[in-house]
Image (cartoon, rainbow, N blue to C red; front, side):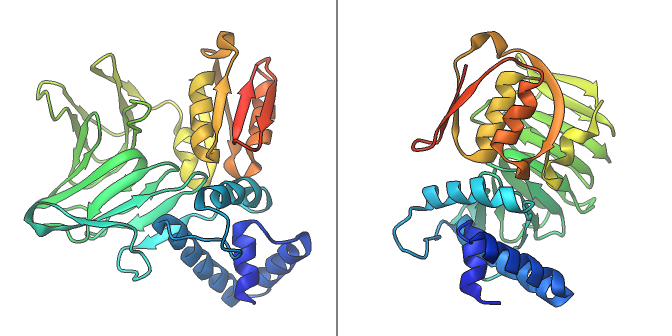
Length: 315
């Protein structure tokens, strides 16, 4: 398969006929399917590293990425990016911290998900709009990552080395477990949910502000306090599968999530619907228009799209 055609397909610039050719080619054999996934990883790596440039050499990264998110997600499910930390193609961002430890920084574009293995064998899924910083190699007895956004961790067990997730609000400490953390600094949110094992959530600024979570429980930071409750819907953690699920979530919060998934601005001009709590789900790949039409079944609103400025006005 011609690589120029594949990259036009990934960029969302392929014609209908070209999209059909790629689909038929990828389904013709397992070898073709593997090659498509490999080329897609390379394409995503270029996006993640910020070095992407369109074939015409004129389109900016932001505009092309917007086009990619809006158009490509309509024709294919979002393919999760699998990142190997040893892959030479990932010069995503590197700096030095204390003890001259080299750090990697990954920032996930809108509409994408990233799956990567950490140096200790732990596996992490990163959601759209998430930034995570981690060392190229963990020091003895110390495993720390810095998270701004949402991530699902499957931590490799090591009794001699605590695993710590640092966020803008709280730290999450574990030895080996499966848990989800949502901590977007822009939205000032923090929630940690435990699926397996045991975690300790604590404030780096106040040692008295801490809780220990057992499986099937979560803690949310509300008004300066950590509130513990039972997980009542595991669907909300299916974002790893490309599903956006929400339960009793305010309309305004849903709009914030959609902004992150589709990389645009949503201006909510109808204040009366901001707090309306909604429950539902849809595939991110179905596109923003589909998502808004689903929400219109339960909430009375209209919307207008300003394509030139990537803004949605809701009234």
